Amino acid sequence: NSTALVADIYTGGNSSSPQGLTVINNKLYFTAYSAAFGRELYSFDGTNLMRHTNIDNGAGDGVTPVNNGDLQLVWYKNKIYFAGNDGSTGNHLWQFNPTNGVASKVYDINPSGNSNPQNFVLYGGKMFFSADDGTHGDEVWSYDGVNTPKLVADIDANQGSFPANFSVVR
Image (cartoon, rainbow, N blue to C red; front, side, top):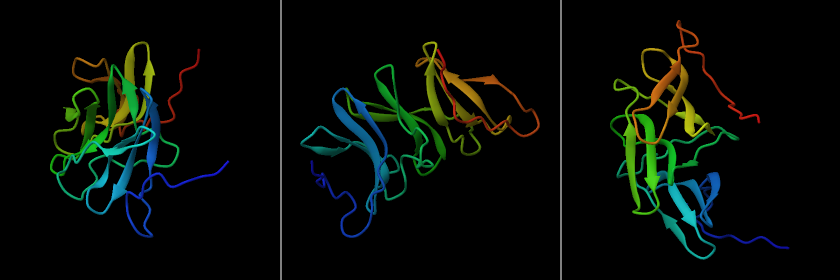
């Protein structure tokens, strides 16, 4: 009944502020911050710590941080989805494929700014999330893992409905 430091990602007295701790295929995936890479995707298999991404190729946050309690990573169709930022096009929907180790942008929902995808939930074989396309404001979107993400509904045509806290009730 003891605790131990697994890794000191942001060395010294600074915190790496791990977020999105999610177990996938017997590995713990999460995001953490370091001065050298910003917030990126990591995994821990019980022995080895591995950084998987450096999306913006610098010290900026490649994986967008979230508020405490918000779901940051979602496992869907054998990939990890999250909000990512390559340092030039803003926050958009990204995926990481653990099979080949490649992270890639899924789609630029808002070509003129940040789409800020968040509040991920799986339902009916699709992934749902909130995002802003620059026209409708922050609304509900769906993604089937293959086709272009789609706006589910423009709930508030004036400013966006800012949906959050999605839950599946069975």
